[in-house]
Image (cartoon, rainbow over all chains, first blue to last red; front, side):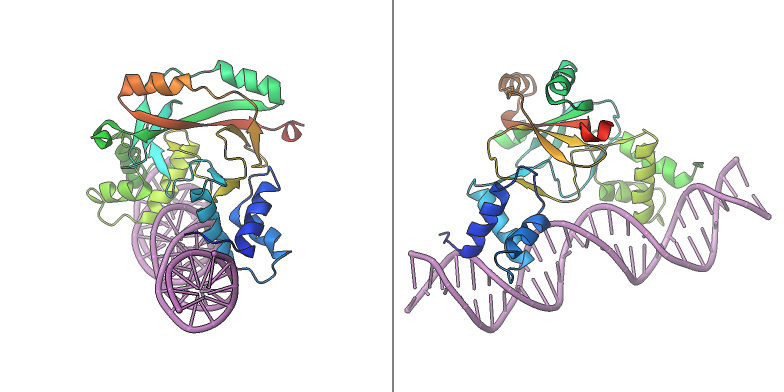
Length: 125
Length: 125
DNA sequence: TTAGATGCAAAGGGTTTGCAACGTC
DNA sequence: GACGTTGCAAACCCTTTGCATCTAA
């Protein structure tokens, strides 16, 4: 089972201390202030553990590899968490939400990306 | 300006020939059937050019680095295309869309991710 | 005592790049 | 002929891993 460690606790604290969606390297630099001899490998390892424990989450798709699409029209996707296949989703674009969020947050929004996760038909059986 | 080349045309054809959201490596293997001496570097280069020309698009966030979030509750994000900062978006989750898409497509959907792109307040000035 | 955690450094794996040769306009 | 493209291989960069050592329980 998972044990406590100075390092893991400091890493969790660092991630929770900001809303800036830090990279592993940012966390590494931050934690080094407190534990100068910590290693990047430990940061990666603990970040992964903390994710599994549900203490932190990872932002973005961050697929390991880039995937390309011959269909350049904006459309939504579904990624099967088991077989990793990516499917196009036949659902109309919600253009309105761009304006709503732009107004509320003060951003200028050009587009959005929506990806669903779960199990595809094949992987459900 | 951009010139035509056998390689680039074959690469575009390969991407357009499928809806499977291929990786660069898949495209490489596919084009090799036609141009055995093509190199992976060319595939990457041309894919990037084709993206700039709007002929293909890239799926997913595919941020170069993973970013972490101390807030494990599902929420939406905004990424500034200029300064690359990621912001949390204060917009209620649309849970209903999961069911709608699941029913329509036959998937089992556990969650979705929504990311907006554009310019943040600072970068608009 | 003992299995999990750490540091360090090397290995991995996808992507990018420098450079000389080549092809297109 | 000028300049964009290609192939090849080396370089990159982030992330993962093997291993001996350390440490929490």
